[in-house]
Length: 75
Image 1 (tube, one colour):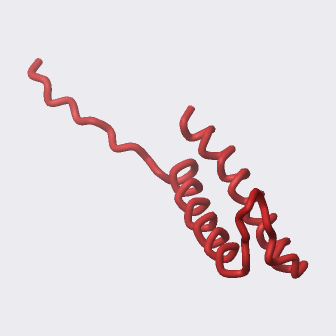
Image 2: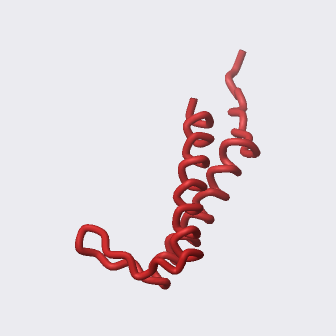
């Protein structure tokens, strides 16, 4: 179940990263949103953070295998 949620979050982070890259490509910076000004530096930082989060989520959702607990119970 958690891996399925992580797969959905991969799509959400890629979408946000694409939106941020689109803002930079169209030279729409600086953007003022709710009183905060987002310039080149803050948008690039957001893209890098989203990229790292996306890598971690992809690793968890598709490649990470949980370690099986060893049963050392006495029979």
